[in-house]
Length: 169
Image 1 (cartoon, rainbow, N blue to C red):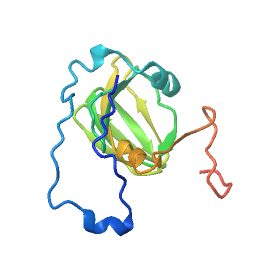
Image 2: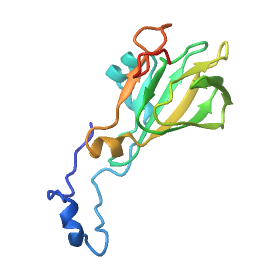
Image 3: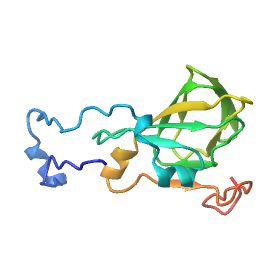
Image 4: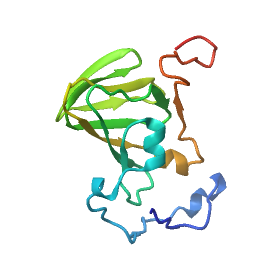
């Protein structure tokens, strides 16, 4: 379970610019290491919502998150978008990601970038091998800036999402 460490109790505002310290303060959290991430077990709730296994890397970063996930042979993730950037590194397998209508093929050792608010999903094209990936995202930074790390999924599989102007995306 994650431990919340408060490193600052004072909230600064625009008029407090002169109170910026001259040097950063080193804060060493209690947890610097998460051994055997996948052996610790998948996050059940998140995995169930996403319809594929997802393992959280439980470290106290305030700016980036890491997850490990996989798709079984022939499986596809839900079509979704979010307000945070994602860099995906393929640990094993092969497939493609559809990013805002552009198909990006990938295989083990490849990395891909998911831009902010772009509709996307990931597909494992191998008939027998699992596709595993490491996802690095800046969601914690946006959450810590006031809850602006938002995620939206297609309401039902096969339906097209609707843009803010009411048109299909």
